[in-house]
Image (cartoon, rainbow, N blue to C red; front, side, top):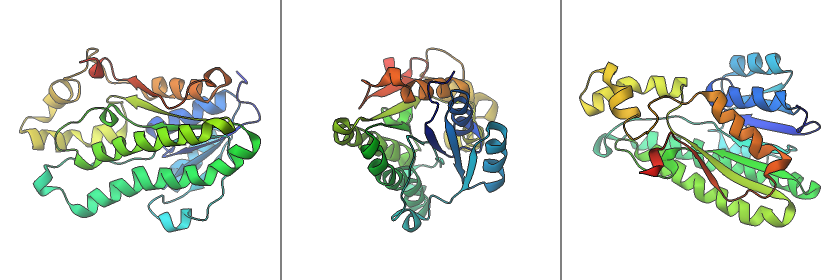
Length: 248
């Protein structure tokens, strides 16, 4: 597949999980991929596998992003973290960190990428949101707030980018088989007062009609389609991949 030949894509949080799957899929479709991650070794490993370019970057250092200029055709805002805690116990500094990484950093990267996209009259902004950008769950105040904010940012970008050939969309998966999900099982068990072996069935997949975790490659396939010429008329949308969760 060469539908993205001569295009450059930047994927954040691309050393593992959804980001790595997206990097591999975009590269398979012909794109030159910049693999961005705070994990320098992980980014380098993925970049080597796909013939891409690693970008070791701490997206929490937002001051360094303010003057950034990006010459990329496809931007996938994927980097994220999670914290599970009841509101009264939620650490304020953790809330601020999540909002910085998952709202402010995407804003700054979009801001840095749009001038180039506008000049060439082509661009694809793809924001990895979540079913939690559309629904809420207990104990995830920062993550849910950040994903809801990302949805709004994506829609504003869609409206401003439309006259310039730039689209902006969100991908909204449910629980994906990634290190981010695996790491929160213990926290979920503690917050809900149940054993860890009951978390996936009773908490993570409770609202999903399809009782399976999503695979990163499934998310990557949708991302690649949104980056393709076939999706030129798709913008301002939120594509659920949640096993039927949001159908309720």
